[in-house]
Amino acid sequence: ANDLTGWYAVAIQIEDYASPTDVSPLSSIPLQFLVNVFDSNASCTSVPEFVSPTREDGSRVVIPSYTTYHERIVVNSSAYVSIIEVETVSPPGLRKSEVTQLSELQWFIDVTWTPTRSQFGLSFIFCFRATDSTGLSTDQRCITLLPGADAPQVVPNSATPNLKVSPNNRIWEVQFDREFTRPLASHYIRFFQEDGIEVHR
Image (cartoon, rainbow, N blue to C red):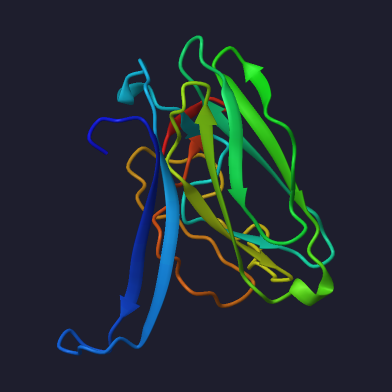
């Protein structure tokens, strides 16, 4: 952009090929978008960021049939900066609240979605990104919503050990009520004291 502020149009062509040596694409799709170059005194290290309980990018959320999905998206901002917008790409019917201040440096929106019967058994991508008052944005996060699916449930009293745990214990077992596919993403088992303080994960 030659250091000039303003709007710039970008056009690219997205093509896929059956093999690296092919010269004719299987498909070719044009994509155009606008880039806004603006002046800002903000440091790139002070970009806003999503914090818990916001779901991690790549999460998959099962929504039981005939229930409403509720989610809170929370963003940290820098001092003296506000979050002005949380942009979403969402399935039909999903609603989001206005951006609301949670604390001095935190802002949030609530989203709700009641899938229709025709949406059961399908998967929907829900993406979101927040922008602050200086024009800086978070990384985009996308999660998959699975309405009408039934998640495996933990069999009651199947977890072992289930009482006091010795310091050298390295084996944990839990049973589910049905067969499932092992997830690709890594997750943690979190350990809490009786007062609710997390001590290890």
